[in-house]
Every structure is written in structure tokens, then in C-alpha cells.
Image 1 (cartoon, rainbow, N blue to C red):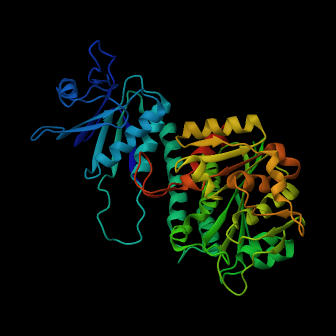
Image 2: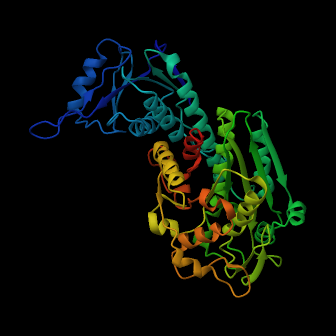
Image 3: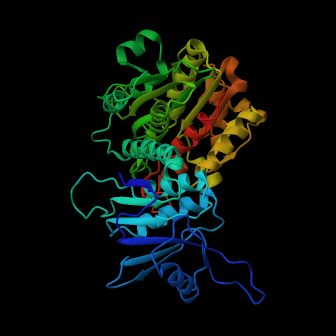
Length: 491
């Protein structure tokens, strides 16, 4: 991962980055961007050069705008002007992402930060640099990014070291979730995923891990997980990861859907819809990575994370449309669509959390429905909760983290769709409002925690079709940044 150092004196100046911002509106139209005074004076002549270049290059100063100027025979050899927009955290995150891509062929850059730079700006810049420089490859083919180091020129570097460290941990855990989600299902099965969690948790103190295999799941009555995983030669697992610091006052349970590959089962998907189903465990990846991040940051909140893991395959032992499944705790579901499997494994985990863990707050993340993208597009998760304060707090954390979610309704009129003639619930109604109805189904398993539960359907934003801002093509690690922001403020 890119090395980032807060420093007061540059020790190399291959490439110097100077910030520019939008000018005040001029009487005859938009004025060109103007340089921002920096905390550490740049080399002689570069500030004046930047002031002359901004109008000549017709820069606007919008966040993420980059202009490169070659300076043959001089030091620095390249001068980059980067737009920082309004100077807020989101703008600096966009600037960092743009720099990571613009300077991909450089080995080192030095960024002169404004004299009045805030910790939020430093965090945004650091996250943008680290997240946009992410690449996932299983082969050595292709040239990796050359950029390996970035120095942040600051008047008081020590004052920003903790901020950079927090941003680095956040980015590292987001990258872990991306790695887990990007990994092909030829190697990623429930056992492999559980092993990855064990390996990552081993490096952090005060974490407890329990992994249930098929025999334990059967003995304890996790019928939903067993049904979904029953068609695969790779048996299901339930990962339970617990972070319990001594100073914790609030206990949060995080649950993430972990379908390591989804064929749709007997209700088999068409090939185009199946192609990217290695991402169907992105919710599990996000909650596990967020918990590891909370432990690394020593956040004073207890977190128990549950990742129900299964591979939904087609075979003679696969569960059938019309089967009645008995979940943990005894509630039964009639399923007529084996491609609506995620809610079945989540139902087990929710019921277990309510019955055995007694949390103060209960959150689940899941790549649950295609309806998420139909309703909100490719970059926004659907949020459901009956708790206005919890919803507001999570939405604020999502926005601060640079991700996106929108609160959706839990219409009581749709509850009747869940009625079954042969079981307690019908798991996959077809009357429409797919994301809403799936959330209503999950709510049935929250028991006395119904008013302290929140569900995020993050199927759409879990994957990016191309590079955009701090997102790289492929898995986005959606939810890790948002959860860490929210967990840092839970009390």
C-alpha cells in the first residue's frame, strides 16, 4: 500500500503538488482558479509559476481537477496543480483519488497542503490516495502502479499523524473487503473465507473467533444456512467474531450476507446475472473488515460480527422451491425461489443474535436484491429502520465516509405478502417492491430488537463497473468506511 508521510521539510522533490481552488465569481463570468497559500513555502518560483499556469490552463479549481506541468532541467521536474473545490473532506478525497491516477507513473510525490488545512482534509486526501491506488490481480501480467510514496508537507506533521493513521487503517480494511470480494469463487468457498478471517484476526489482540461447521450448525438448528449450503460440496460456515474492549458501554451486532457464489440454486440464474456472483458475500466482507478495523483502532464499543457463509449451488442435495425451512429459534419459511437465498441465511443470524447475544443495536449488510439498483442506481444503498435516530446516525456516517445510502420505507401494507399457507412466512413474494419486502421479511426475525435494527441492502454499490473517484473497477468494499465512522461515535 502507498506509503504516506506527514513531514515539515521535503527530502525529495521529484514531483510537487500545489492546491488550487475556485476563485470568487467574476463580473464577466467564472474567474480562473487561484493557488492556495501553503503551510510550507514551496521552492522558489513555483508559487508564482502556479499562479500563472492556473489561468493559462483554464483551471476551475473543482475537486479532482489536475494539470501537469513539465519543468525540464529544474527541481521539481514536474509541477501538478490539483483542484480542491470547497476544501472539505469530500473534495480532498476526490483530489487524492485524482492524484493517485494522474501520478500513477511517478514513484514519489510531495503534496504541499494549505496553511489552514483541517484534520478532515488530511483524512480525505489520505483515503483518496490509498483507495484509488488499489489494484486486484491474481497474475503478474501488466505493470503495477509505480507510485509508492507520497509526502504531505505540513507546518506541524505530528499534529496530523493520528489522522493519517486512522485513514490508513480505514483504507487497509476497505482494501481487505475488496480483496475478499474480488477473489474468484474457484478459491473462495465458506471454509476459505473463514480461514481468511482467522488469519487477519490473528494479528490483532483481544479478538475472539468462533467458526461453526455443518455439524455444529445442524446441532444448533441453523436451518437457513444449512438449506442454502446444502447443494454444495463446500459446506457452510458461521463466523462469529467478537471485539470486546474493557471500556465498551454499547454492544453492537453486525451481520453480513456471505454467499461465496450464487448460481441461484434450482431457480438458476441466467449466465449474465451469474457472472459476478462472487461478489454475493460483500456484506460479510464489509462487516468483518469493519470489526477488524475497530479492533485496530481500539474503538471503545463491543462488536459481535456474524457472517453466515454458504455456496448456493445446483445438485441433488440443493434445497427446492416450495421447501419449508426451519430457522434458528423455530420460525419456518416457505421458499418458492432458491435465488432468494440471502435472506434465509440472514434470518438465522438475526434470530441467533436476538436470542443469544442481547445487543443494544443490530445492523445487517447484504447484497440482497437487484431491486436496490432499480430503485437507487449503482452507487446508493437502500437503508431500512424503524429507529429514526439510528437511521440518521448511520446516514450521517455514510455521508461523512464518502459513500451513499437512502432511507426507504417499511410499508406495513406489504407485510401481508409474507403470509404462507404452510409456514410462518413466505420468503420471496413476487408482488413487487422487492427490496422493501425483503427488508420486511428480515424484520420478522429481529424480535425485541425490532426498534433497534437497521438493514442496508448494498447490492448495487458493492461493485463498480469502472474507475470513479476513489473507487477502482471491481469490488468497492462498500460499508467498511461508513461502519467505522459510525462505530467511532457509538456510545
